[in-house]
Amino acid sequence: RRERGLSVGEGAVAGVVAGAVLVVPAACPSSWAAAYKSWAGFVADWCARGFPTFYVVGRGLDEIVYTYDLAEDLPYRIFLLSILGLTVPACWYIPRCAVTCGALALAYDYYFHGLCDVDSRTEECFATDLRRWVSLRRERGLSVGEGAVAGVVAGAVLVVPAACPSSWAAAYKSWAGFVADWCARGFPTFYVVGRGLDEIVYTYDLAEDLPYRIFLLSILGLTVPACWYIPRCAVTCGALALAYDYYFHGLCDVDSRTEECFATDLRRWVSLRRERGLS
Image (cartoon, rainbow, N blue to C red; front, top):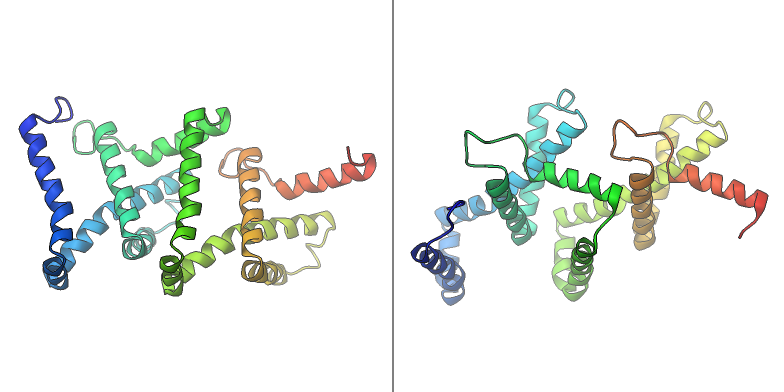
């Protein structure tokens, strides 16, 4: 089928099957609800959600482990639990998004990396191409079409929560939604605060007089209130700091990573402005 495409009959059968899958649940909601309550329907539903989601999460984490040479330091059980820890909440709280991403990943690897071809199968996958694409974009920048797609995706991410506040409020009240929300706030905020305090400690030679626990508590003492009282400002500053270090200091490049960061450049800029003044 990959070489010759679908014939008219096969296309018709595929259309009927897809139509039945989409139309029958809407036409007979009571029967589908009863089937879902049964054990077989429950298992089938979770298999339909879980397999593509497990694939896309597992491939993504595997690429991260391979890129940063973490295989020796990461036991297989911990790696598997990490995949399950991301797969189950995704299937539960964002099933459509999770299944869509998984289906796209499976389709991409099937057509471009010979997923089902035993003889021509390689270790590469969608995550490998995505990493290469990101590295190439860092060197050459986004084209007009890629910028338009990025703008549409970013607009959807920002508009959908505002358009459906009730559903997002319900997800926030759940345990996984609460944890995910705090992770989304806390990670970039922790990064920008930690890097800033680290630069202060380095500049004034406070490392010998400041125990590591006190330093860590200082970061947490600034991160938590910032995430609680000024979450948008905190996340924005953290995201800008991560983006700056990613593009200018090789944050994700293991070979070219340095100790310098946005805080180092900011300190240099302030020192230079003190000498020359503002332009």
